[in-house]
Amino acid sequence: MYRLNVINAVRKEIKKLPSGLQAAMLDGLEELAQYGVALKEPSVRDLGRHGLKELRINSQEGIARSLFFSKKANKYTLY
Image (cartoon, rainbow, N blue to C red):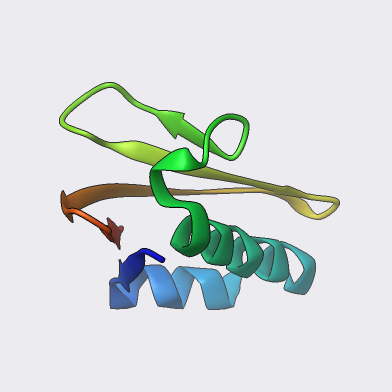
Protein backbone atom coordinates (compact mmCIF):
# COMPACT_ATOMS: atom_id res chain seq x y z
CA MET A 1 0.00 0.00 0.00
CA TYR A 2 1.23 3.48 -0.89
CA ARG A 3 0.63 6.65 1.10
CA LEU A 4 -0.85 9.67 -0.67
CA ASN A 5 -0.18 13.22 0.48
CA VAL A 6 -2.91 15.32 -1.13
CA ILE A 7 -2.33 19.04 -0.69
CA ASN A 8 -5.29 21.25 0.27
CA ALA A 9 -5.47 22.95 -3.13
CA VAL A 10 -6.00 19.53 -4.75
CA ARG A 11 -8.71 18.63 -2.23
CA LYS A 12 -10.54 21.88 -3.05
CA GLU A 13 -10.32 21.24 -6.80
CA ILE A 14 -11.63 17.68 -6.40
CA LYS A 15 -14.65 19.04 -4.48
CA LYS A 16 -15.42 21.38 -7.40
CA LEU A 17 -15.66 18.51 -9.91
CA PRO A 18 -19.07 17.21 -11.07
CA SER A 19 -20.20 14.29 -8.88
CA GLY A 20 -19.43 11.53 -11.41
CA LEU A 21 -15.99 12.89 -12.20
CA GLN A 22 -15.33 13.42 -8.49
CA ALA A 23 -16.19 9.76 -7.82
CA ALA A 24 -13.93 8.65 -10.68
CA MET A 25 -11.07 10.77 -9.30
CA LEU A 26 -11.49 9.26 -5.82
CA ASP A 27 -11.47 5.77 -7.38
CA GLY A 28 -8.29 6.71 -9.27
CA LEU A 29 -6.65 7.90 -6.06
CA GLU A 30 -7.58 4.62 -4.36
CA GLU A 31 -6.01 2.69 -7.25
CA LEU A 32 -2.86 4.82 -7.00
CA ALA A 33 -2.68 4.13 -3.26
CA GLN A 34 -3.15 0.40 -3.87
CA TYR A 35 -0.91 -0.20 -6.89
CA GLY A 36 1.57 2.70 -6.87
CA VAL A 37 4.31 2.29 -9.47
CA ALA A 38 2.53 -0.70 -11.02
CA LEU A 39 -0.26 1.60 -12.26
CA LYS A 40 0.47 2.44 -15.91
CA GLU A 41 -1.22 4.01 -18.94
CA PRO A 42 -3.95 4.86 -19.54
CA SER A 43 -4.42 5.65 -15.82
CA VAL A 44 -0.97 7.14 -15.24
CA ARG A 45 1.36 8.83 -17.69
CA ASP A 46 5.04 9.37 -16.95
CA LEU A 47 5.86 12.96 -17.88
CA GLY A 48 9.54 12.08 -18.06
CA ARG A 49 10.95 14.86 -15.91
CA HIS A 50 12.17 14.46 -12.35
CA GLY A 51 9.72 11.62 -11.65
CA LEU A 52 6.67 13.75 -12.43
CA LYS A 53 3.59 11.72 -13.34
CA GLU A 54 0.01 12.48 -14.31
CA LEU A 55 -3.07 10.70 -12.94
CA ARG A 56 -5.55 10.61 -15.83
CA ILE A 57 -9.25 10.30 -15.02
CA ASN A 58 -12.13 9.99 -17.50
CA SER A 59 -15.88 9.81 -16.91
CA GLN A 60 -19.03 10.61 -18.86
CA GLU A 61 -18.85 14.10 -17.34
CA GLY A 62 -15.39 14.84 -18.70
CA ILE A 63 -11.74 14.43 -17.84
CA ALA A 64 -9.61 15.37 -14.84
CA ARG A 65 -5.88 15.30 -14.32
CA SER A 66 -3.64 15.52 -11.29
CA LEU A 67 0.13 15.70 -11.20
CA PHE A 68 2.11 13.77 -8.63
CA PHE A 69 5.60 12.66 -7.73
CA SER A 70 7.27 10.39 -5.22
CA LYS A 71 9.68 11.89 -2.71
CA LYS A 72 10.11 8.70 -0.73
CA ALA A 73 9.44 5.07 -1.47
CA ASN A 74 5.74 4.25 -1.12
CA LYS A 75 4.66 7.90 -0.71
CA TYR A 76 3.19 10.17 -3.40
CA THR A 77 2.45 13.88 -3.27
CA LEU A 78 -0.39 15.19 -5.46
CA TYR A 79 -0.53 18.78 -6.56
